[in-house]
Length: 298
Image (cartoon, rainbow, N blue to C red):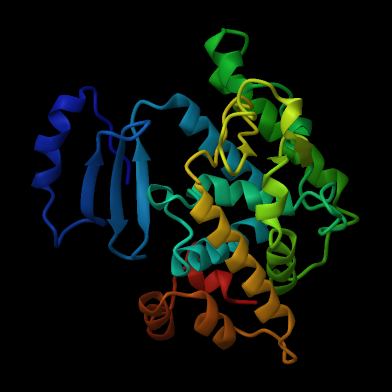
């Protein structure tokens, strides 16, 4: 569902007009105080929360590029859905409470798919993102050095090139293996975060001192925005949130890796999914890959 508004002042008059039992959305809220104004709603069919950004060209391009990245390998979408649901179940996906926003979770998964960091994903599923777009495209657009169309076309062409280059050496890890190695990689997140920055742009950890303006700020977790390198995508994470994230990832790795029997859908539903979502998945057949069912079809 897409909403376009020329004036924020009229939006509050538009939203109450939506009838709660019609259409594709309910619980529609206009978040005026957000860093970028948002319309937040819950999908009636999928029962997931969605954000609509208003007048945010940079946010649109970042979302579009994440979509292009997902075409490199279908496991990215599946792991995003699975880990996001796990984060929701463990109360780790709410920046208002000092934990991770969804963009940061996506960047952690991209980082996991890049083999330069700790060699947990070999061969690499994704390249360093600078191989797909070199530079800071938000600044490039603001400075008139490029256009939105050029960014999209250039990135899409390089994604196609990378896919052709790795076609003969595709990483064969299953979703289960990638899930376990994800929790393994980030089980020490709290310790690593004190001195290092997660950089999907370079595909590796880098020193806080390597970037002056942003990354030395007093923030407890630094995940460099690969498309706007002066921004910290995890700036909302606080000390308590980081400790909870690190401990939960460590606990999940121990629980998954110590299981003698193969991981199956039932085990994942019981351990990674919220009770209300588990109930829905057990009683409803999803129509396509975009639902959590596809993430749990291992």
